[in-house]
Length: 212
Image 1 (cartoon, rainbow, N blue to C red):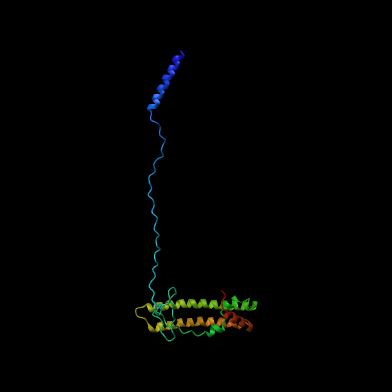
Image 2 (cartoon, helix red, strand yellow):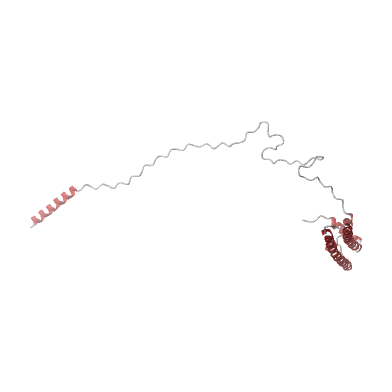
């Protein structure tokens, strides 16, 4: 019995040896082949581009032109020479108005009433003068509108009557004259209600430059 068992084991071992001898030996797994990368050639150093400068004249800039980087100077016209093209001739300074220098506008007096020490009596009297002048100005304005409408009708006709137009013009000029007369009269009356000290203070304030 033991002999049979030994023989069966020997047969099994021999069969296993035969099977193992027929199978090819297993090869170790090889890593996947990587594609060959071309070797980068060393980059050649690039030279910086040359800055292009305009050729300079050895004699310097042309006459009348400033060096590079400086603005062109603006030359003012010399005395006795005419102005540039398109420029009007300089105006002569206007002579000072003697009335404006010696009188004071009503709004200026009321604006600086605390600085010049305007009393209540003076304030009331000046307001009365301004009220009278305002009423007179309104009347003159209405008259002016009526006369201008009449002038418009006279000049609109196909045949203009010269005598009537000139007479209407005189009326309009008389109204303008009355307006200026009223303006001057109210300024004179306001000045007469001020003391000498108040007038001097107003002159000082009148010639004082405005504050910024």
